[in-house]
Image (cartoon, rainbow, N blue to C red):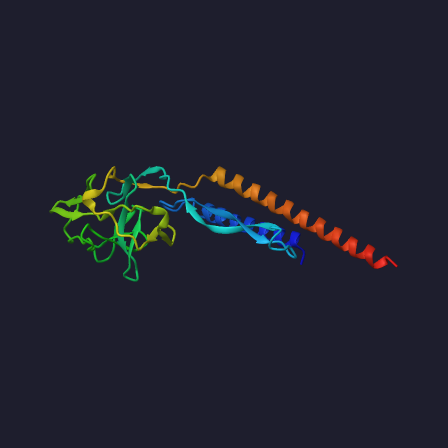
Length: 248
C-alpha cells in the first residue's frame, strides 16, 4: 500500500478515536461529578520507504498518546438530601468498591443501604478517615455533615468522611463513570488544603453540551474530508495504472 494511504488511514483512525471520546463525554452529561476527557496525540516519525538512513527521509504519522481529563469542577446542584455533599477544592471521598478495593470519587450523592451503611447511590460503601465503613443505628436521624466532613446525628458525632487529595490527579485511573483507582499514596487529612464540603448539594458533570456537539461536528467534517482525499488519491492511482497498462 502507498505511503499516502497509510498516512490517511492513521489520520482517520485518530479522528475515530477523538469521536469515541467526545461521544463518551456526551453520554455522561448527566453523570454526577463526571470529568470530560480529550485525546492527546503526538507525532510519530518513521523512515520513508526506500529512503537511505543517511538521507533522513521521514514520514509523519499521528499516534494516540493518551487521555487527559478536564479537572474543572462541575456545577453545584442543590438537593434536599442531607447525605449529599459537594466538594469545594480538589478533594476526593474514599469508598469501598464491590470487590473490596479502595476507590476514590467526587460523587457526593449518598444514601443508606439496608444495613444502614452510608453508600453512594451506585452501592459503594463510603469510608471514614480511618478507612472503615460508616454505619448508623436504627434510631439515628437529623444527619448533619460539617464543612470538614464531620458527621453528626441526634446521637452525637459519627466520625469524619474520608477526604483525601492526590499530587497527580491525571495519573488516577477511571473505574466506571466517576470512580477512580490509583497506586498513589493519598495525602493525609491533616495536610488537606482549600477543601470543604457543602451539605445538601452535589457536583454535576463538567461536560458542556454545546462545546461537545461542536467538537463532534468538526470531527465528522474532518473525517469526511479525509475520506474524500483518500478516494481521490485512489482514483488517481487507478487512472495512472490504467494509463500505464495502455503504454506499448
